[in-house]
Image (tube, rainbow, N blue to C red):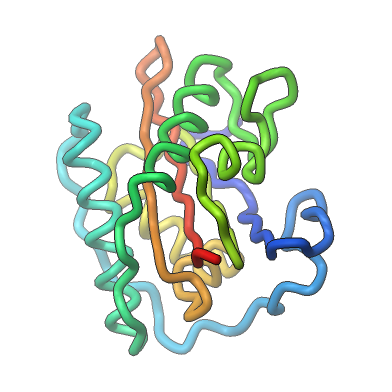
Length: 180
């Protein structure tokens, strides 16, 4: 996959239809035109401190939400656990995908169930090989389906994970949810 790639976002609605490949689940809100441009985020040096990267991704995401007139997302430990699991699996396999067949918690709904996150709505953004938190947030905000997840008023909680492959490439996962 190309350097600095991002994958199409997905969004699940509890008891709704399964997600469609490469997009949003049927019945989810359709993408909208951004009401404001993506905020400019200055890149910093590459950090291999997962806690610092995660904190910065959440902070930058919440800055974008507030700039768009939305409430900030509340960090959620269960969503963070689900994101960490997925980032670690992608890094271990060297593969960026929302679904990883053959791993214990290969789909977003499997990860949510495993960590005990009961939800009304659930979304996920993933990225590979973005050099730092500002770069990955900017890439997501510049991609309409990812931006829609991040700026959805229907999603109220966030968990972020990052893991590095043996070759040093970072794999990012952002889980967004609204609890049941």
